[in-house]
Length: 399
Image (cartoon, rainbow, N blue to C red; front, side, top):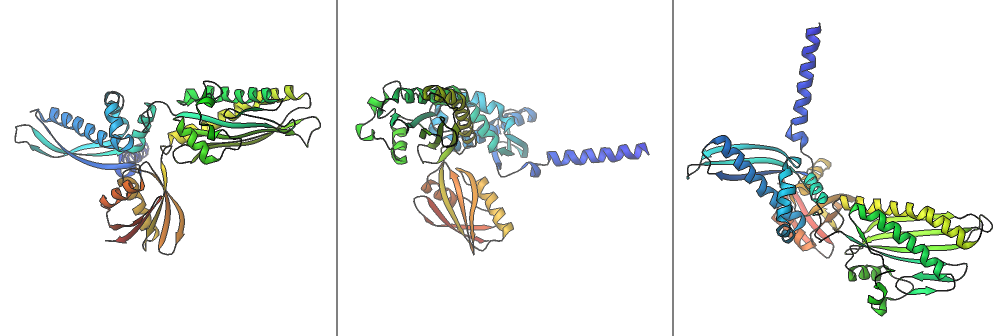
């Protein structure tokens, strides 16, 4: 009986090992299959095999890294990529084997190398080295926060200055938030601009020095100061209707990516101070809650950064074709794995004979349309029917 049990256990363990190491199980939508041919001048087949594996990994790594960060940034950071990324290829090359080993004309060895590459793991390594996005240096954050005191009719913004008797108190509060943002963002790899210092108001064109800042203008100013993120919004102080002598603090802050206006973080909160003198209770409450607000925004920005969609463009993808659920699932997986520049693909609407997706892409609509047209999809005939400013329409049929 014990022998029977141990045999069953051995079979079960072998079954688990087969599942864990089966490349088909490992393959997911972020994993791509790649085949490369290469030669080696080494006469020993084992040495030639290692040499060819090395060449194949370098070639494939360069191909996908250039797709992710661009050729210019790859060339600029080539040494770092070779030393810090490609040397850790075991973290993103999930499977590699040789095929069709032959003697080359030069007396060496020629072979085909098949591998599976996790683009998600590759992006993670690039992120760790600060190379994931097509920007130089850490991403910059520009706070554009208006603070108002409706009790005394005062306000403060760094781009217009102070209005009213309590404006000194208001500037002190917004600086508390600026301090917290800088403290929290820096360890995460972001540089938070301190706009109440360094002459930013004087450097801003006079036409933008207005009390009510439209979102479009805030994004333009962010771009003007070379910032990838703008944190816009308002801090509002007013009398509390719930507690006599207390003040209500309303906070609404929205972080947007400068290039496309996408929201990458948002905090909406309301707080009540204790009853007492305005300066004291506001100082106590803001010093208590502003660090929490800052941490919340920082986490949201960092999560957006890690996702690989931080600087991407939202593109609407309409698929026309009679595809059942299984066919649509197959097409979606192939699209994600084979079309360069696509980060995510999310279903937004199902209509008769039509499905509408939303794409996160670091390519323009024109670049993405060309990439789709060049892609060969297994079992599907795909034609780019139409493309616009933020939309691509495809006709998809079964081969």
